[in-house]
Image (tube, rainbow, N blue to C red):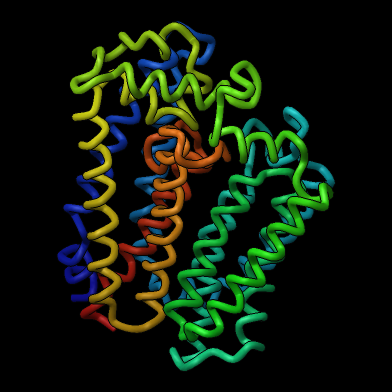
Length: 365
């Protein structure tokens, strides 16, 4: 009976929307890499999607209460793996982010997001949804702050930023008061200003990337190059776009890394305003389905898990699309389900698998 209920309650509409986005991703990765040394990346992306689908169904079958019990151990393992990255990680373009495991490369920082969703949900669920004390708030900050610092020194500012919405969602759903939130906001602003002024936390190129979006024409061939080319690509798409494989900025190799960070710009150039809006509506549908599933969860831990997933996905979508249209700084945050990359694809599918897990057990627990 439990198995029947699980399959009956699987969110097939959500999965359909996800698969449509994956199909769009495969077509766009093919279009942006067809005449480059990255040709056939769409085949690798297809394999990652297949592995992600399998992982999603497997994870959806494991009771999420058991996953919450395992979360502290997983947290410890991944903190150790982040330390190992600093010691034995492979260095690429000045950053250590991957650990080589035979022919494969493992990026712990991407997987930490899923572990943090579970750990933060477990922490706040155990507090019972009552008003938080400052001691409990500081413990939550420490829980998320340790992996954030370890990833920041890799350096990987983009992934570091994706951890913050998990904490914010946990605090607001966990019972933080308006007064506490206001105090934390003031303290956080002061710390950001101090970190920016010190020059010891953020490297010069990171500062340039964070400010170049305000006026990319100041350094059009340097820090402002990516934003300028992205804006040209999006604007040149017009209403209906130039057509698949016909983007002048994309096919002319002016748009940087169009198959990862700027895949939305490449898609907008080829499919125009109509195509871009269609993709955003798909994302909106996915997020709304997840929120609906959180509202119907059987208990508080389940709701916290799904809203943690929603927080991460929303943050990545808003920052990536905002970056592409010049409203956000360039931070290297991928667009979920569209950007090429195994770690990102697997995280998204596994996160959706945990959300499905909660939905399927809303009438079982």
